[in-house]
Length: 349
Image 1: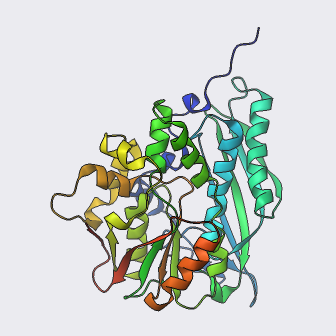
Image 2 (image 1 turned 45 degrees about the vertical axis):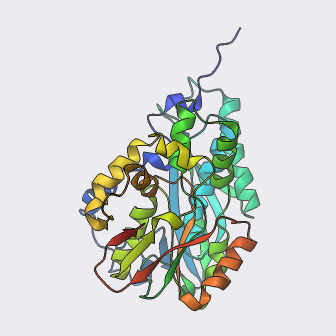
Image 3 (image 1 turned 120 degrees about the horizontal axis):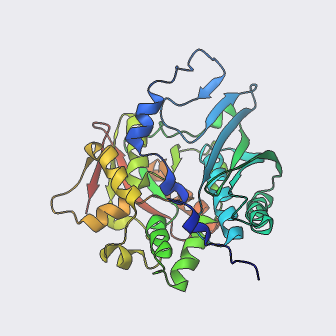
């Protein structure tokens, strides 16, 4: 009789985008990297913490390149593969690009997991790539202590239509396309406290491709886009504020939440990453007096395969909301605005 395989999440010290290095740690590491400004065709590098690198190929095409991988956030191997692949492709969409192909990054404890389980992880990722209309054209695999899966994702966009996190303008409104709370749901799942409806909300959100990003490229009034992932809404909002040298204002009560998240947050459910996030960038965020800790946890909650944060001119916001909702993002909502002022995030309500 064979020994049952352990839960995927039991093999990892963290899961999903909660595995990311804290923003302050990442800044310290990257501070020693040489600047890439000498490469004339490098349109976007590491300077503003954007979602992907962009290289101008010619007057009509720019190549968008990114990579993302992490440890399991769920136990079902097929779902794990789907989530990781959706998350990796999100960075391509966030730059306004259309994916063209992907490479798989695979690290697995081969003495612990069966080849069938590992195959299901890869199959889940391939299914998402197929839905995006691209192949998994190769990759690399290693024997590792913890299970790791993700993609190198490549896309194309017109050089004049690249979307970045640094183009927001004073007067823009901010639209968030997905509900918050993935990290909280993931923590509840790992503690075996997540109900079936919560798990469905988790999978539904994390496997929804951010396809509206490619449709926003070149659209009048869309000034900046980023995807909200491991650093939470406040962290990625702060990157937009710093990249644009403006103040980002967030209406906490307007931020959409996934089903069941508020009750879990009020009961104290949180991830360790939300605390690390706040410790890393809290000095750049202004909270109102008496702001509840559970509400702050929601805004710093790491979002595995989270939604897009879009800065758009106020007179174009309705059309962008219509576009996003037509793509199936029913929870999309206006969550704030961009105003003149210091490069900070100011939270209201």
